[in-house]
Image (cartoon, rainbow, N blue to C red; front, side, top):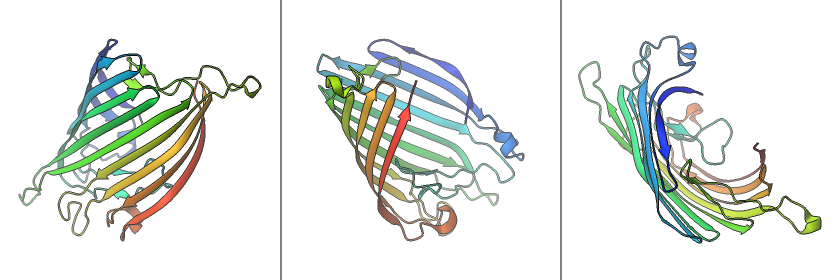
Length: 272
C-alpha cells in the first residue's frame, strides 16, 4: 500500500545517501474510520563501495527507520509486529510480537554488508528494533522493548554473468544473461544456487502483548536454484526449513505449541 513521503537521494559510482519523511498510508482512514491522528516517520540509508576491482566488490552501509508517532484510533496507539517466512505459508503468519499497547514510538537501525568475489556473492544485514511505550491510564509505565533480526545469504552463479552492482540503488542485481536461452546454439541463460539463514526475535519481556501473550522467534534455513533463460524471465525452486517458537498471540491460536517444518516452493515470474 502506498504511503505519503517526501525526501531525496543522491548516488555516485561509489556511494549513495537517501532520506525521506513519511506520513500515513493512503486508505488508512477509509479502513479505520476511528483514526483521529495519523502516523508520521522517516527513513534514511547510506551505502558505499570501499573497494572495487574486476573480481572483488565490497558494499557497506547502514539503514534506519522510525515512526515518530503511530496512528491513533478508538483503541489508542497500538501495534503488532507480524510477518511470514521467506516462503509464505498461506495467510497465517506464525511470527508475532503480540498486540503491543500504548506505543509512542518505534525505530529500527542496523548495518549491511555484501562481498562479491568472482561468481560468489555474500550478503548480510542486521536490524535492532526499539519500541517506546507510554503510560497506562492508571499511570503505570509500560516497559520499552527491543527486538532483533538478521540474515546471511549466499549466491553462486554457475553459468551466466555474476550479480552486478547497481550504484543507483546501492545493491547487487540479478545475474546477467549474455545470450537468451537457445539450446541449438548451446545458450542456457544464467543459473545460480542460493542459500539463506535468517533469524527474527520478537520476544523481549514476559506478557509483552498482554497477560500470557509473549513474542516469539523464527529461524529459517533456505536453499534453492534460480534460472534466468533471458533477462525478463525467472524460474526458482526453493527448499526451506523453519523453526518458530510458540506464542498465544498468533491469530486463530494456530501456534500455541510452536511449529517447525519444511516447505518447497516453485515460482515463475516475468519482469519488463
